[in-house]
Length: 307
Ligand SMILES: [Fe+2]
Ligand SMILES: [Fe+2]
Image 1 (spheres, rainbow, N blue to C red):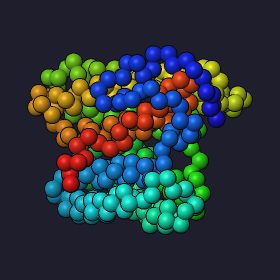
Image 2: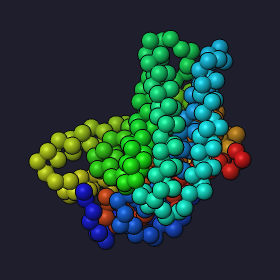
Image 3: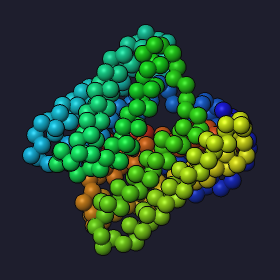
């Protein structure tokens, strides 16, 4: 695991704009978890899954009564789990009985939702459901869900979840960034050509990173992680995630001002923010001199309006 305490930050952090940065002066937290407590992890993941359940319901045809009822069944369950997670102690360790009990309680919920999405993906592959989401869309959401399940599988046993190696972290979240860029383009009115082209540009940048990350995995068969080219690659990805984040912020500002021509919902657009902040916080651990992104919010900006 590359954990170098370097001091050169390059231009990372300096180009952050809007509400991502906040105090960008923080240094590397030293925690492999990107400075996140287990409570923060639960809150992040449960809100992500709650969003996913909303997207599934939103994109199902009203004629698919059984499936949108199934999706809606999860709304109050995730909401209640979030309420309980909010009451967890901020700094409790995985071995505390309260944390272990919470993880054990939430595992079946996250697992059941993952199975529902897996089934939707299967039905979509065989055109057996009227659902306006593609099979690959579910690869993204299921990949996220399974990362939560992986962490939960440790916490239910009262042990800390080992963080993903850099190549695993990139594998999960670069694919996510590509998905978000492609989905964003699909939500834009075709006359928003300039914005569509910018979304495409990010999709191809992140696609190239996928290829490069695959190569990194190959090098690591004979070379320990944390070699200079890999660290530089991590810094490059971090900078692109920041750039894409700022672009989505501009798009969301236009949406909120009703200046954007699209078929998007605010929730869908904003889903990008907590996931990208999570990714940046975890990725920054591998980039010497990078800011900690401690102020980068792990909840979507409009969340307070739900309550
Ligand atoms: Fe997601
Ligand atoms: Fe995502």
